[in-house]
Image (cartoon, rainbow, N blue to C red; front, top):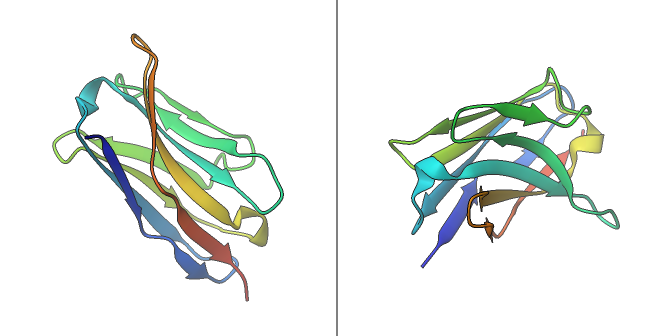
Length: 117
């Protein structure tokens, strides 16, 4: 059974930081492209950042220079370090695991991030 379990969300003031974690089980983690997506109220889910099995990273323009995605294959975990948060970053953040070779696609349950004073 595949599980992606996010943690680390919460309430933070503008300018603050949070670190999200996503622990994966049931998949050969090292071969998967891991990603973070987010969905704000009444908006479409959007890409935040991805990291491939070769550690190639991709970021949405809105988070470049503020967010950093990383992975630890020994812990089957992907991280999203979020700095200089602003209210526009408020959303439910979802972890994604994607295997390009077989088109397998899995999602976590999401973790809420709220940026507010």
